[in-house]
Amino acid sequence: MGKKRVLIVDDHPLFREGVKSLVERSANYQTVGEAGSGSEALALAVELKPDLVTMDVSLPDMSGIEAVRGILDLAPETRVLMLSMYPKFDYVAEAFKAGAKGYVVKETTTARLIQGFDALCRGEFFVDGQVSQDLVAKLAQGPVRDQSIQDEKYGLLTPREQQVLRLVAEGGSTRQIAATIELSPKTVENHRTNLMKKLEVHSKMELVKYAARLGLIDVESWR
Image (cartoon, rainbow, N blue to C red; front, side, top):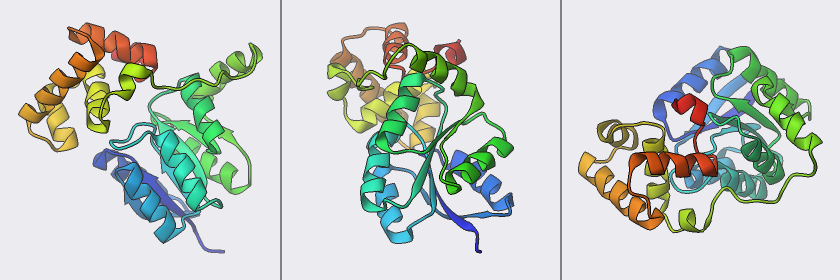
């Protein structure tokens, strides 16, 4: 039997390269494509029909959750493993409700990532140990609430403004953000000014608190 085919979806090229390296070193998997946005992921899912997709939660044009739904509508046999920096219950719950079969935190070990692939290929679910305790505790409190990650003000932001919001809240400087999303520092500043007006916040600390309230960042990691 040939190697299982993996499509890597993440908006950071260096991170995609790292995942690709891990996949290529494994005996049973191979990378067949990379995507930096949700729309690109949907197109490649149709074209390549991968066995597995690694999906980030935050993408520049849509959320990873939306991308999961789109991919499974177009390629229902594909198994999606969320690979995110956010070990948050709401993200995990929304991902599984969208059809993902696994959830792994980006800081996980290579072995855990491959274990996730193996579990999905066996038709099982997989949850990284870093989030499983929180998941079990929350589920024990009652059914998952049907809530959206976004609120009304967040919905007013463009996809690019949402991306800049997250990167600013994570502590990125204007120059770092500009390099990450390949825009000029001036354009990043314009996006930041516009999104702060829409959200009615007046300082970076207010922006961080807003992002934390929505679960867009891990406050402990930010500290």
